[in-house]
Length: 333
Image 1 (cartoon, rainbow, N blue to C red):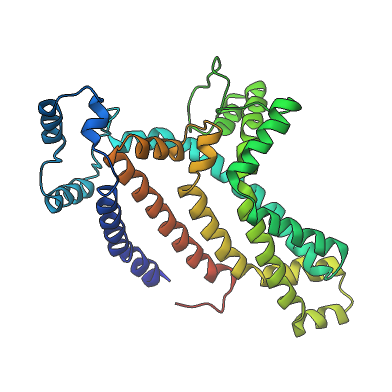
Image 2: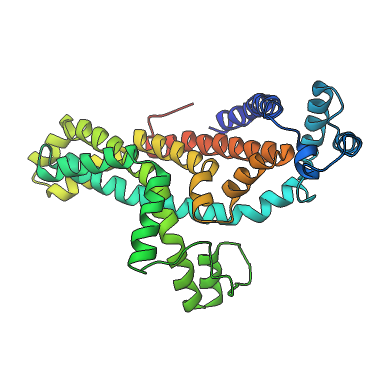
């Protein structure tokens, strides 16, 4: 197991190198000159040339990439051309908001998806099975931006049940310990702030959880259907075990390997791809600054955001692979 873990960690190096090259050269293909964007339309050619020289944009692209790699190995992803702050500091400041939103969405998707998938598989071709399948297809097919705006109009504007946008009202703040508002509210014992934090979190988390919930539900149903048809399940039933014990203790546990793979993939996608949800709900996370970075031609920040997403995606998949051996003792590396 240790050898496998070390080998997988070593595979991170070529993967991240490949990602960095693709991102770096793709970003340079974005139309527009970042120096022109920063200085505005009234800038003179001399001012633009001077700023391009300061940013290193007048160097050959290969030389720019080599300098980027050298600095990245030293933990320096450059400075944002818009704010002037280090990219690492920008990502660190926004990471807690993205983590809080992503983890909330994942909890909703896993709990609802596995519960619906298990119930649907235990009652095949029933009304519950058909209703759960329709919900799963609708969840996978529904565009996030459309669902997000629907939630805002219905729950926020018409019914006034949930507040938006942002993580907290503009006039309120919370001393940061972990950066996760829900956790910090609990640590401070501030129940009013906890309710406010949860209320702001519900709508974006529901919107972000829709697609992974449908995917997890469909995979759970399919895997459970195969497991419940196995001989050891029939033996358990023949022994007179309660149906709930047979389904959840024997069936669900043995169905978790493919479901775990899907959960890992969805977590990686959520961590790196919450751009639309954060932008619509003005959620101050990494997805929001990714959108702003593309709009403002902020090359260094775009590269940092994509590298961050790639690193998280690979690490999550590594964790999933290692969990395989925990869930299934037959798995050896």
